[in-house]
Amino acid sequence: MIATAEIQVIPIGAGVSVRKEVQRAREVLTECGLRMEPHAYGTNVEGELDEILAAIRKVHEVLHREGVVRLSTAVKIGTRMDKTPSLADKRI
Amino acid sequence: MIATAEIQVIPIGAGVSVRKEVQRAREVLTECGLRMEPHAYGTNVEGELDEILAAIRKVHEVLHREGVVRLSTAVKIGTRMDKTPSLADKRI
Amino acid sequence: MIATAEIQVIPIGAGVSVRKEVQRAREVLTECGLRMEPHAYGTNVEGELDEILAAIRKVHEVLHREGVVRLSTAVKIGTRMDKTPSLADKRI
Amino acid sequence: MIATAEIQVIPIGAGVSVRKEVQRAREVLTECGLRMEPHAYGTNVEGELDEILAAIRKVHEVLHREGVVRLSTAVKIGTRMDKTPSLADKRI
Image (cartoon, rainbow over all chains, first blue to last red; front, side, top):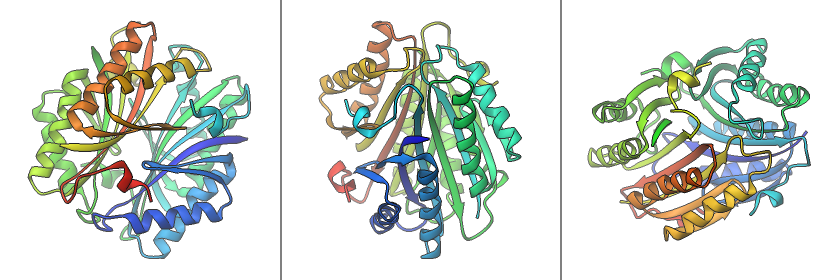
């Protein structure tokens, strides 16, 4: 099932600036091979829902392993049956 | 990795009242065996992150199979390494 | 215009535990006189949209004045014209 | 207080395609004079928090007046005291 999603990773307790952690999260998403559109409030992705969910899991896994103590991630997931969902289609 | 999460499923194009679809989504989450705390803006859950993500996937799968054309799901995921995260701990 | 909303306040850089700040945010919301239903992932409120938005503003104002350096607040707002929206109606 | 925000307006019961309503919401935000960065999962804005909140209110007001029966809006608000928050600064 193809889906679009927005992923926003918020490190809690890693200091006021979280640039380094957010950058690392983006690297992990990139390694997952998803089509990505980063923006100021998260990263929009497009792909198989299973791969998107696996990518979210990997971000938590990698960031924790590298020392980030607490993560709060906000995700929006969009799926539809009338046509294949795409980020391009959601840009108006 | 144990996580807490909030899952809010929004059917788009299923009419102004979405009670039936939201109820069905809750049934699917219940069948997934996660510890659940439903509230007016979603369902809070607690469990293995993999099981939570699989439950989200199943909600999309089942609702689409039963005829819901479009879904927009908002998820918040919380993980932490300093202690086991729990919904009880998040109630203040 | 009556609305329902969910308000989740995330202090960034205030340490791994944010219990004190979240508790303070709830106190401010309580002082604003909104009907409130706290849960593990935020606080659901019901009331005039203007008062809800003013309450969100006040939370940011008070917490920053009291020393919280950075805040990320997630809000969901629901309004509808076919009937008066209420938290009771959203509990399924 | 300067803030950044992400605003995502979801019309419920307006049909499976909500392009027209989302486009109208963007027009209203544009008329409010906020600095805007639209993307596939919402519109990022930057400006006075009061003006951002007023813009959200106006979107609900205008869309309902024009016939949209139900709206669910997801907002993320960011404020910080160590420097002036900006969308440019949040792009990594």
